[in-house]
Image (cartoon, rainbow, N blue to C red; front, side, top):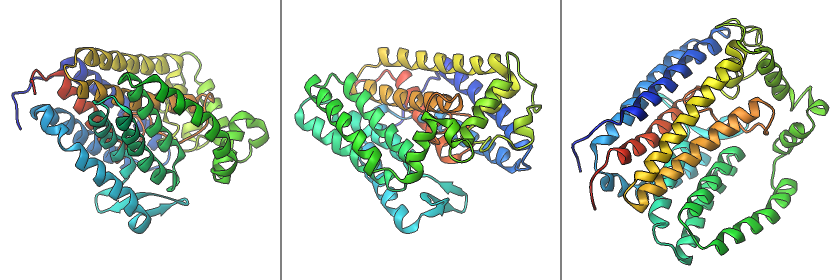
Length: 355
């Protein structure tokens, strides 16, 4: 169960820098709204998450892997339980209201599904494909019903990338692409809620929706553009200070960074993410076993999807979905499970066992 552990200093230092950078920007985002308690809470979440990140290297990889079927089914039960015991916020039921704070089981379900899929896709045949499809459809549908379309898309992105890397029969992948090309237009007209459809339409034509659905998008674009090359200065961004930028500590924290630190600040963050992705690629190349490789690529797909989508929506390049920016957006559930997912990679990077 336990093993002698070594720390991967490259990954650890990179995660520490991202975490501190995120806290630095979050401190400014909450300052103007007099909700500095959120900054203190985020420090606690980061400490817990970082401790888990380090702690996971002390366990043998096959011991951690053996838990994933149970974690997956536990995550399904938690997602179902939301419809009976969940807390409704703004018409969505995505959280459990616990004494220590809100808990979002869809964040837990992502990492549980990645590990479970890695075990399924180790065998590359038609039944593995079908089982993997069922394993992603079940949590994705439950998340759509919350409703949370953005997170459900992340499940499918993770699955497709893992399928591709698993070298599954390309006929199966082509069939998925054909099916989605038929399903997506039908889902747009008959499956989306009105506000979800309006978000997509407002992205395509923001001026027409500038006073309602596109307001957040337009304010974010203006805030990002106002930062220029070097920014307005720390805690000196007018959009952030005077409340023109909505959801500045969650969905649009990237815009806070752009306003205060400009192009230099945003490029610095993108470089840090690219360094993280390159490190994950190196872990993938050095992984000894198929499950390790698949988990690594699943975690990569999850973090890359979150980063690209959040930055893209802040820049007006992608529709608004509400996906958190890893290590920057305020939130306990997402923070802890981002750390845990990278803790798995930390374990893989330092593992030299055979099983």
